[in-house]
Image (tube, rainbow, N blue to C red; front, side, top):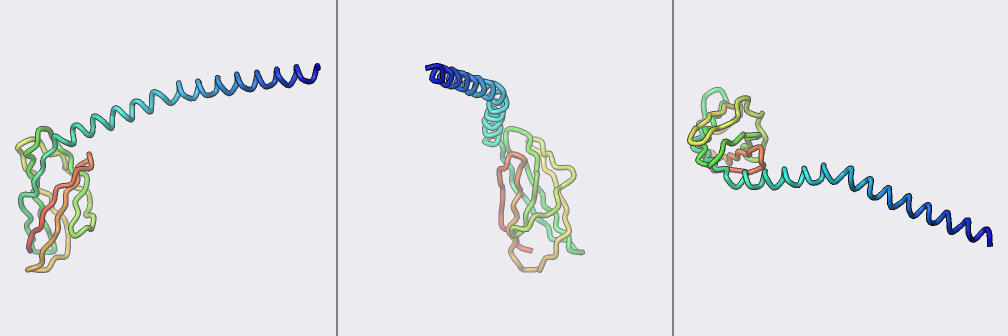
Length: 135
């Protein structure tokens, strides 16, 4: 009978330890998880307020391409990447565009006259804006 009491006591101690561990884990992770969730919701709401237009693409001499982007949205937008025919170009150094403002970005890119190019601008919130332009 003594062995049975010891085993039951050990099971109770293990169960309580497991329960305390779960509660401690939940208390430690609840803050970061809630913070990440709120950040994601806030980012999504702001993403819906973004509005960019790839308003002009100029194909310049010396394998240069100039991409002009206009912000017609409700909030400032930060351009995080620019793609031409699904090839990532270097990130633009000055990349925040205020509402009702345009920003031009110049990149080095080999291009061929008369060829159509798919230009895509992606914001820091992950929203793409794109168009097809002829060299």
